[in-house]
Length: 523
Image 1: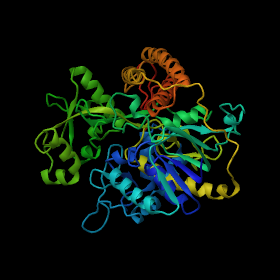
Image 2 (image 1 turned 60 degrees about the horizontal axis):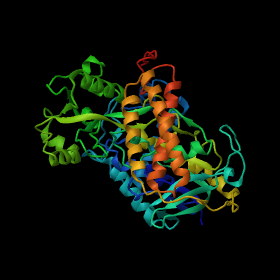
Image 3 (image 1 turned 180 degrees about the horizontal axis):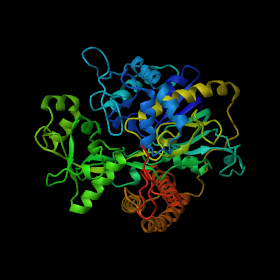
Image 4 (image 1 turned 45 degrees about the vertical axis):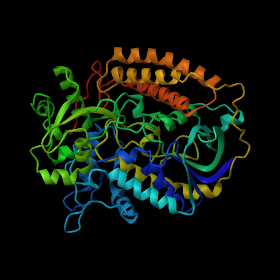
């Protein structure tokens, strides 16, 4: 058994930021199911949106966020995030993160789709990698932080394991820690914590094509749902319009939206532009509009991809701003200074997740959540580009500030039983897991993807019930493994996406249902 003041599950920007700040108050244990750097943060290319230039304003950033979210965003939350952004950017600079700057020392700001001004701070075209590098380096040296990899969080420990009944809207559910599978020893460990912080990332791998790392299987969301916590807005799954079309590669390599901000233009394979048909903002329209446009053009032309053409832009500047994209494309025979890039939409970001308040508190006591696994209300029906890393920073800070007084009043719950796997056996048929996962990804991709219909969603739900029942039966009789738990979590998560999509009576933002009335966008 392990005990800690603060337990952090996940090692992206949300988890690491929370850990660094919480470590000034007490002992912190960070657990990750794979290596520490296997996090969505590592793959974030674009940057971090924040008002740092005198030509910009909080009001404009707030308005842009509300417009992108189709005014489903919670305005008080948007205001908090935008206004606290400069302080959180200063934190990152203090942590040693090297944002690109102009010769005069000011930030070299980019502009991305949906933004009315230049406000994207970045480190070339691998901002997330740079943020992750600096935070991991700092956390690994902190005397109050312990990081343990390959320790897979399986279940939240609540009163349920003390024999009490918990219901979905019970306001007295408490979290005492987690049960976690030690991948190296194949034993389930009990980890007790005064405060638990979930930063387990997204759900991209419930789809066939995703920019997310393979660890993104909705683990935190599924755990909270099973523990009777409340989940919101799962229907709003953002597909990034432009991932590199390179069949067989997983995750898909992201072609940052900043390239369109730089001047790259979307074209059909025969060389014709098309975004002007869908939105007056053209290639700089919000992601949901661009993704649907690409999806539609692919269906019209019967093609597997469209083209992103940057060959008309300044060659040296293109290579300087996007060195990793240039290198990656060159590795598969594409010189982006001379040839357009084949791109396809890919599952990228979840705007919903575990319901949290303005301090990152979930509906379960002593349990906080942040990053992509949480639904703060910032994104509404669609995330504005580069708001996600910012959201993670702001809420990690606010969660620590809120919990620092709480931690003094709490103690460990030592009555928790050990994990009971009596009567289970080792599953020798791994095909039962791998094939079911493929079926799940096909169902979600073809029936609950960028464009949906009532018939498709109903068909998806019917098939998902079969997979759910088969997997639960397998789980009950098998020794736990990471693949089996991931499959179970992915099915739980997919169920929530479909359930909430079917419940939404209008087509809005990322939930585009051809059978539902479409909300007229506000501006």
